[in-house]
Image 1: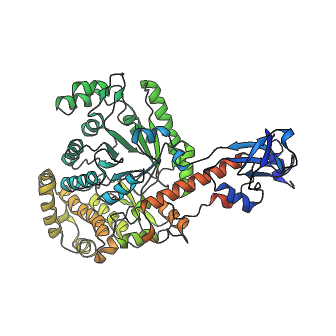
Image 2: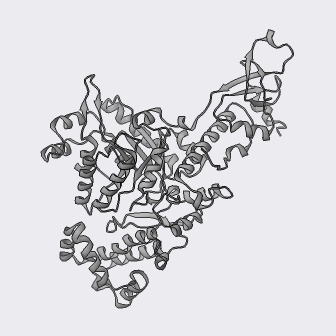
Image 3: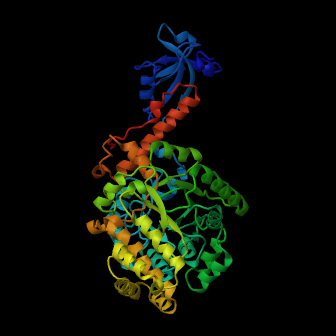
Length: 549
């Protein structure tokens, strides 16, 4: 049995000097060490109480020689840690390239749940936010872009918009890219792409040019959100020649831009999305992230890239410890989602935010996605307080089992109309006709030829409206709210319980971000000191949220 395990751990530590204490005596007790860990913005010094005594932390003092002791309290010095700022947790090039103060991104949430208000607030705080353009019509996206530009200016703080892959609405995807280029949206978060297409390539390379000193200037910055190595490889490589030729042939890129594109990856910022709300592969970050780093390094060497390619982390990041862990894995930046949906700037209704604030770790479920319903692609949503997950899965099961809405058994159809649609299938279809006549008439033409596709559009109506009901806070439709959410929401609620952030009315995206980053810095400092042999108490790894200026 080891009587003093700490003495054994620290036995091999050799002093590097003599330390004279300053105004504060070194911390050796658990209570004092907990306090010392929190002072991340100043250097700390690891000292021993005596040559064979306890290891502790000093916040002030100086290195002296033996002839300067003169009776003042001195301690063997084991090492010094410099100041640690939340701003320094990520890759410095990320801040420099994008003109940011913090390595922190608020990811896009579809249907405008990531509002212009949220984008503007993040930009003014020196962070990056992506407006949630997915699921919105072109006119609404243009309104949002104009609103952000009016608030921030064309040369003001950094911001961006979402660019969602829309296999069922290719025209909207191309029109959105056209809008972004025309309005000068310089950063786009590309999501749901399994491969490259001319539109995402067009955005990535439009405006690139060679400067007089030989460097290539990149006008637009594409953030590719990925969760699979093979998809990451496509964005980390130069665009295929055939796609570049298509862009040139259609006038989307100049010949010079296409030639320069052959030496640059499609995206120089890759966001690794682990288990998260909405679209997700449910993969753990600690397994996925190192693999993507390896793909990055392999392709950077293969193509001889001279510019840094930054890899950020997303999914499951909702506490200081998880954010600190992401940075420890090598993340250039972190991206959060679900936690921002519960903030006051979010476009989700107050009732939806209350539901999120009550979520715990197991209160989520996978269910069919509206935008890729026919493909069987799923999204992760809130389960507690809503029937949406179960009902959406039921609709997909019916879609798989039947060839047309007319082939549904009468009792099954009646139940769907009564419990889910709260109107007849014919009334739902009338609404679909009006919607697609304006958004994408080709969908109606296909439905006229294919009864199964018509059934899919009717079922997708419910999945699409469920998100809108949650945004509007329709009290009659509370049981049908679709709220994208991962288990990290439960971890966040447990972390903030008892603090000022427990009440959704106090949750601002900037306060959440500042507390996550501040806490991550404290957790990082605690781990640093522990590797120096300091007996850091477990309480030092638990950062309590507080209002931060």
